Length: 228
Image 1 (cartoon, helix red, strand yellow):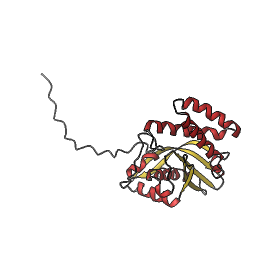
Image 2: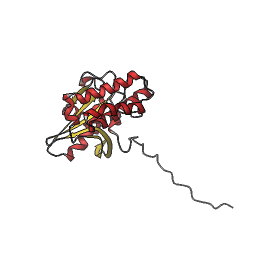
Image 3: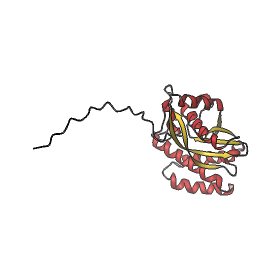
Image 4: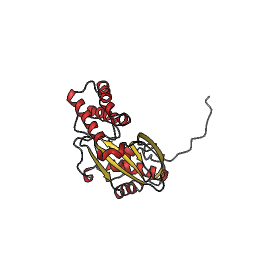
């Protein structure tokens, strides 16, 4: 005969999971703000939202990021040949006009005098950052990767590349998730650089256009996120 056991205790319902990613990614954090209406493309890429076919838009964004990561470290006279060689491999199935357009966009960015501080000696590409912030009353790990980081004796500049087509013409047209993303990067870096101004900007590669995000806008986005 089977042994008899006492009845199991009755358990209450399990606590509802808040469904926050662990660690929280800056590129998708704006989903926590209830009134954020802009789409968060965290299931594809935080930097791509073009009118082109999604697969090609993602591929094009990755290629543009790689070119902007590697070419600044080369002598100017070597950049074109290196970029063409890379595009022949990474964009072999693109129409020639698309490869030429991507090459021209990157060349225009690197030759633009106004963008020179972004790519100055000592600046770094693809900088991984991680830290802790209080979100919804809980201490959360936040992890992300900054496209470009330029540090001087007085300022820290965070730059995030965006490949939107068409590029927003003003800060008012910038999707909220982009501002939230920069606000989180800024919050993670501020304790690491006491006494220096930590600023952030969006570089829209298709214009090309550099839009500085005011500190007040990032402060407001961070407050809405952490109090959500």
